[in-house]
Image (cartoon, rainbow, N blue to C red):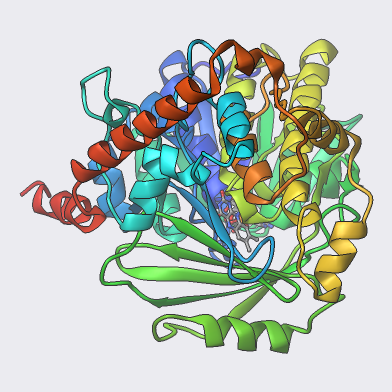
Length: 502
Ligand code: FAD
């Protein structure tokens, strides 16, 4: 038997969402090239078990893996998601939706955002939600996949999913194993490394698993990237001070909305994620401002159906590894870093890390420093831009509780200060390079949170105010007409199960 050549053995440590996403991607894309992929997970260390709301790019990841949507949604008890509704983030009683997809359309070649802001200043524009098919459908419990007709807003529907995290890992495991990934059950209890390179991991049963490239998906433990290689940690508690979540599942809604809810509370916020078989609930909070008991009581009081288990508390730190990639080890998932799930970005960051990695895959077990440096730079920038988006939700609030007053008064990161400054000066929004959140997302956030804005972009005046106002009214009518063609979300879910293969 010939030996496997160098750089052809990838070892993944951890079998949570991150580990199995990596395994499924490597198995499918690198398996045919003869690269051997082994995943080690311990039955004694549970996965985090939350992480159930996603954003639209996940559909690209699934397409890359050849995952069939219906089969995936059936296997994971999944539902569709058209956006996130933020409730009480500015002040109690107010709400807005951050919808997926596009809001409105350009007006005479001028971006919708600029024209809407201008017409709004004249008092003649409706709430932003009225120009977004996804926002209206989400609130009214309707869903359809995009249709083939290229002109209708129904052809551009932006959507993602909610799913059961445990079932998702199992589903991906099936995909990975079908492509030759080998799963090893066992507890990693030491890491053999020298000069910043990992040679092998040793399991508690004494076996040794050697590799050329190691992927640390061991969750908050970060066994390889931190435990062995001490890559360092950048802490963001200063910007995002929530450090605990208490989570519990409750009985499923009869008619789940295709929408994640993020409900502001005294010292943080609650999530509500409707699946087919249950609803996920949690309260993300700052332990400086609220005890675990108080958070649990609020969570339980806010449930809209009976709890299905005892609530459990998850402690976390917000920030990221100084080096996501160090030597021949790359961290993904919670081992790489964490930001609270306010905009459902963690699973996306796993996907994004994988996609960058697949473009930069090292040809040897000693990757070129230029590749490693680029990966680290790109991932750091991605984390930073998402962080700024999250911080804006906290900064722009008019709530009265001490936690919220502290957040409104706290210093904000430079990048966010610049974004707010540009918006204030005529409603300008610029997307930075490959930033995850586009102009539409920033528009929904900044206007939903009442970010101050003065004047409007003078380019709008190329279109008479009356004409822009009429065009907005027309867009609103097209959205309403399109909405009427969308069936209830429950029909879409029922169809999944009706179409179940024999
Ligand atoms: P884990 O799930 O913790 O898996 C770690 C794995 O490592 C396990 O398989 C374990 O057995 C293994 N392991 C650990 N130590 C050893 C060892 N010594 N030997 C062998 N194996 C070992 N993300 C979203 O995108 N959307 C959300 O809505 C969302 N909500 C969240 C809510 C909360 C409160 C939290 C904390 C996170 C949330 N996330 C969310 C993030 C999401 O859960 C994670 O990004 C995702 O699940 C990836 O986790 P992981 O695989 O990195 O880690």
